[in-house]
Length: 233
Image (cartoon, rainbow, N blue to C red; front, side, top):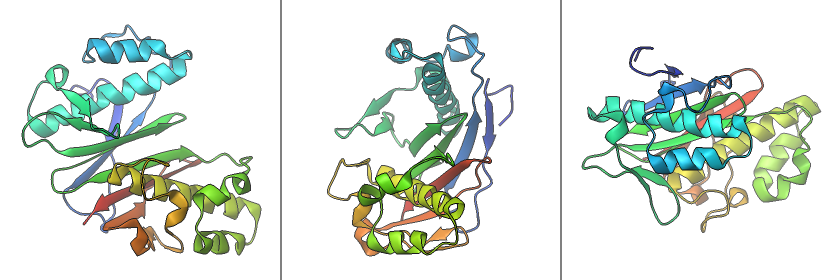
């Protein structure tokens, strides 16, 4: 993958050895100065351009458009098809998929200045990135996000900085799992507080059986961010 093949700041993510060999990941660093009429966005179809235009803030439009265009280029490389001709659809839960024979599974996420893409031909994948703000009041969301084990692990940490970091680690791990499932937050029988991912040993989370047949690991993220990758097994 080079700058000549994808007109965005997209780079492959070196995945840890714990991740399956068929899973690949990419990170996008957003250029908010790029106008939406830039030629780089030309691979979007009319519906995607209309969706981007509905955002009230340019930054939100740029995040959506950049991730969608980067995704089209990544999937074009994966399938050998033209990026603009790819047909992207969504299932009944709103999870996007590539409507072509023998298409790989994929998932995307974005927050702040960065986005992530995960792709696999062998399994379902989910990815999440979140801007981990130091001022975030995590306890307000704790009942909806944390299982008892998660909360015990976080509360036992030495200081608030560590607790906030662990909360965002937990949040991204759980959202990646739910996105691999295809449910999303609050969208199915499995809820964020219905399973545990803590404690974390290095990059690997101790995901409990309530989450189903999925594994999840932490990804290297830019400073001030947390990220995770989940996959089915």
